[in-house]
Length: 166
Image 1: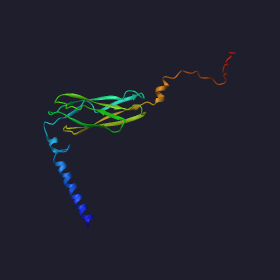
Image 2: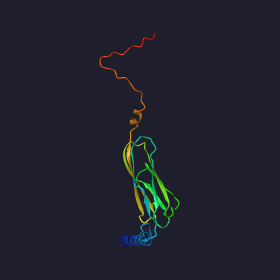
Image 3: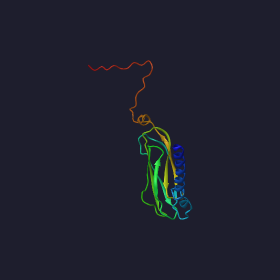
Image 4: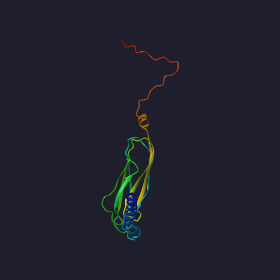
């Protein structure tokens, strides 16, 4: 009987708690979405294609954006889809009409094709925005092939010369 009453209180309590969270202004609050003066983040592009890049090269790119809303824009978080994708974003508010940059660094010591995302969370009308990077990192052997010494191919049936130094 005690277990049944505990379960009832737990379910009832969590229901009230979740209701209070959605109506009092969490990051998905109605007030933010219905505010006609709210900040708005507008990116010039939401995809960066590195193409084919060398293993170990600089994997940094930039996503330029503008606050096209009326209130200051504050980016609260930016997170990569994995540890190989690290975003850097402005911590100060971006005023109406101002532009800024989100930098994304990809670890190019991981050969092969990749497609990664960065999720930007802010106080804008659109609370989250997903940016994408993609490309192909060459293997280390492909990089080293350009730097090796040329060699002479030995033909079938040929005998190598002997070293005659004595």
